[in-house]
Amino acid sequence: MTTRKSIREQYLKFLDREPELDDLDFYCTEIENNRIHLDDLISILKNSDECIALLKNEIGKKNSEISTYNDIRINGKTISSGYRDSEKRYDEIFKFCKKFNRPISVLDLGAAEGYFTFRLSEDFSGVFIAVESNPQRKLLELCEKNNSKNILLLDKQMNLKHLKNLKEVQHFDIILALNVIHHFDEPFQDVLETLVSMSSFCFMEHPNVLENDSTKNYHRLQSETLHLEKFKPQLLNKTQSGLGNSINKKLDRTLWLLENTQPKTIDRGWRGTSKYDEQFGPDSDIKIKSNFDEISVDYGLRDEKRNWIPGIDLRTFLENNGVYPTNHEILKLIDDMVLDNAQDLGPHNLILNGSCLFPIDQNDKLDDVNTKEKLKDFLNKSGLL
Image 1 (cartoon, rainbow, N blue to C red):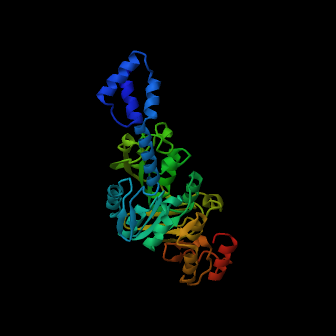
Image 2 (cartoon, rainbow, N blue to C red; image 1 turned 60 degrees about the horizontal axis):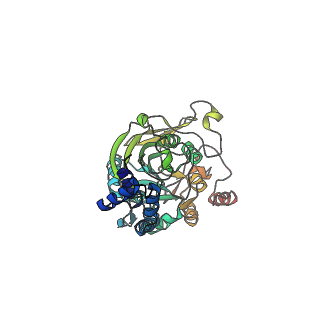
Image 3 (spheres, one colour; image 1 turned 120 degrees about the horizontal axis):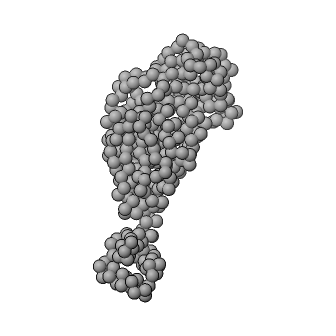
């Protein structure tokens, strides 16, 4: 590497700009005549007022970006912008969701400020579940301000085990995995496979392999390349990362649409119980049949088919630290439930959609928890509520 190229690299690294020609000539002469070494130049640049000012500015930006990753949306209006291009990405999601001629269920993993959850809840019927554990995003506060009755919020830091538990008891039409997989400590590919397996379609965005240490787990991006080929991947668009220094901010992140081409199943009654195939043998899981016009469940244990009810069961909601609707609102939804010959009001048999609780499988068996008061008592004693 030439002396001039080395000097230029240090200017770009520490001052984020090209060196002035006079400075380039000066330091090149100094280094070649052994009056200073390259390490001396690095020290000069790092301790310069210009570099210190840049570092302060970057720290300020990073702190502000914590609370403004995506656009802030309240009551159908965008009131402030984040550093990612939210609208361009949402346009692709919106175009796809218009294919559905029925209510949809969406899980927004790592929802940040909830922009995509709120937009989808405004534009489509269904149930929209946000997962976000960072209190600096203030997503619970934003949910309360929007007062949407078709939104659920799980305050949960998910790991791969949590995702696998969720997959065994739930299914979603769509999962939004927008720049979230790289936050997992487990292998990226395992996380992706699990997310696709619990959905019919998955929107996936992942950091550019060239991103720097402003991106979590950036050192794994090159060695853990995601393999998308078996998910019938469709490239939708590319938007700039908006994160880190001026070079890193301009790196493109690619938005993909992935499809689950494998059978879609519910594998157990609720977390902690045995899987259906362990209890009753092969082919005893609940099969989900889904297209853009309808979605239904086919029980492997008995001759019963019914329409799928969008939402998640109350037990799963509470076990995953569901915070919206609040506990107070959950108790009111229990009081407001319409019951007809209720026989088993265990929380795994109650589908929560935000505004209502729907009892399911009431003809299957008789259970001790068969009244609203017994349900509330069970939730209290089990620590779920």
